[in-house]
Length: 65
Image 1 (tube, rainbow, N blue to C red):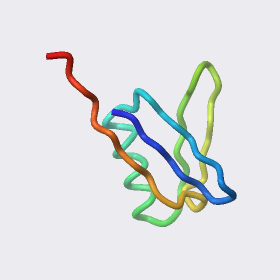
Image 2: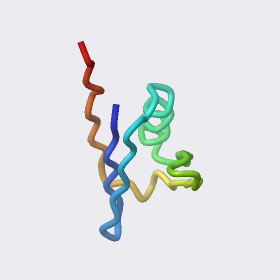
Image 3: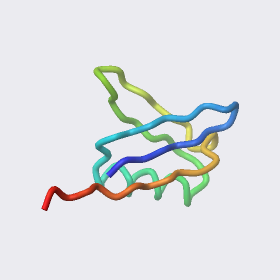
Image 4: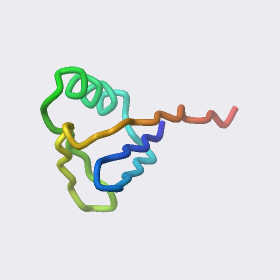
């Protein structure tokens, strides 16, 4: 699945191969209203303060079958 994370200050992050565990962690932190979400993209690590997230768009993975 892919995630589009729209943040304050006009920043948008795109995660192409997000795992269900990453999505669950992000959902938990967003529902609590605090916390952080960490991921690695192209060898760089990112730590996102969930207070800066406006919304997340989830696109399911497409199957090759």
